[in-house]
Length: 295
Ligand SMILES: O=c1[nH]c(=O)c2nn[nH]c2[nH]1
Image (cartoon, rainbow, N blue to C red; front, side, top):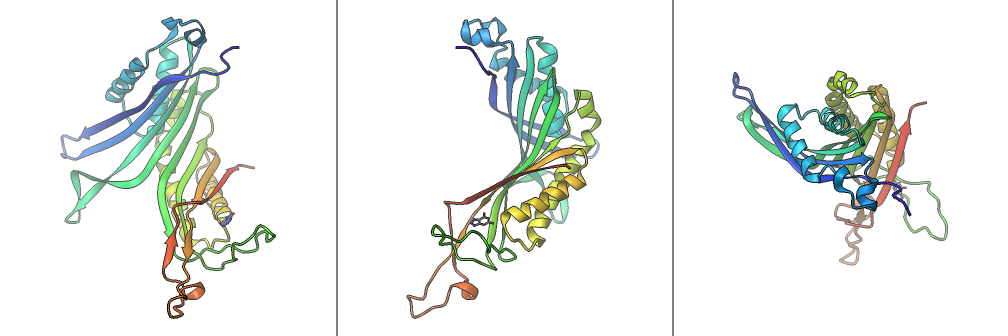
């Protein structure tokens, strides 16, 4: 037997950084959780108990905090590229770094109609993520994503005309609730070097804003024939709006809200056009995935 693949490092490295603008007193915060795994000529640490090739995961963790102190930590695409590039520059036997950054969304509070200089609220559950592979040979591939953005529409969603056979019980509907937890990702065209990422630094925040706006607008305004049809439109829009992206990927759970028949009680009408009280389902849920590429 032989090592067919290996990577190791530190996961769940939580980092918080504050920027204090002395002139205005405005403070800005960033909080993220980092996973950084290294890949390279490390097989002997597995096969021969040879620790001479091991950059300790504790040193990986130390490096994350040091680089966070010495460099900007936003946008996360920039910091992921900077962090990964550090390891392949510093250690000739490390040939790739796999960096995942989950950033937590501290939204500045508005108090008495004014942005507060140092107080923030966290949007429940929504994160902005980056997964990057920084490779000596293949350059820097980055995928950005929005995860955990929970949305619901109370109408404007239908699902009919699907396969009807001896396995089908689902009734067709022309008016249903649609709810999902958005997981939307966009893969950037590969960057040759960290300098190329640095040159594009202004594009990452804009792309996240555009992708989020497109997702919400299409979700709200599309007269949805299915999750599949709506997510394809979202993907087309993002590819058109962000030319530096190559592929857009969505993974959308279909979080079902079941109608509840109450007619057993004095004939109360609560189904079809009379439906008002529904039963939100924790599971099973649909899961619809799609990647859309150029051309
Ligand atoms: O939007 C939907 N897509 C599907 O594939 C599906 N299957 N059941 N309900 C569904 N809704």
